[in-house]
Length: 347
Image (cartoon, rainbow, N blue to C red; front, side):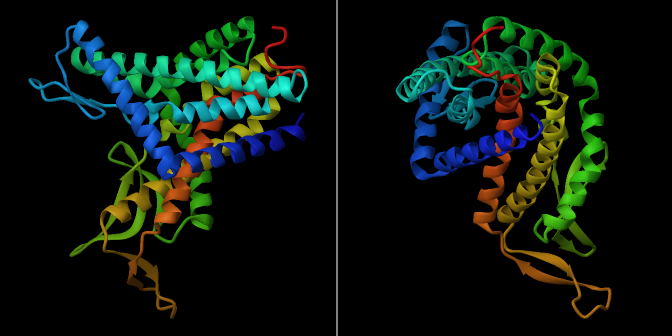
């Protein structure tokens, strides 16, 4: 199993990266906008029935009195979730011949796509209601509850009912235990991630560190010269380790602890990609910008040279980041739990 696991994970990562590459193209972006607009249109009358008189502009739902707004963004269009479902279906142990397998996959994608969009509509309704009536709970729902619930929308099409229920119950318990320690535990990976950034990141990217009680990634980009100031970008460590409870639950249920040897490097790689994407995004937003580099003459001084934000490099970092995050949260637990003869066979 240990020799097979890296191949499965790499195959999943390659499939996800290819699908996210398609979604990043003009056709994929147009489809995402169309789905997001349709979700906002469907949510508007339902929210009105629930007592919220909102004004919709494109994908934005705004309260004209209070002034707050909820936007149906890229995550809510569900296309990334459909990509994750397609990846899991492709890698699931096959049952039946070629035509039968293709038919099963197409049926799974059709039903799964409908379920995902229904779930996304529910998410838009719940988040908008939270923004209106329970603002302290908005972040909890948006950053924790709904992302973890997404796992089970996809898993429902690949796991038998008993195994799905066991995964859900154990994940809920582990998530409650993980939530209070998530930031401190995630910070244990920072030295590893900083080592990755030092050897593989673009010259503008610095180290991840804690400043004023919040985590951020430093840069060598000049924010000012009198005195010399460098840009920093906020970095939410727990966003990269959200998958820990569900991966641990899958490992415990499947009794396959060796998969943790893949899960931890995957989370660290996602955190490093998130740091790179944050700094390249910051550079692109503040052009023209200069970067400090060591004097090639060995004087020990630093030189300020123009820095060109590579949009292809930024797009690649974002694409790989999405692939790593979706793999860790949505696909890897299913790979851990899969059984020969098909995921839905047996309990």
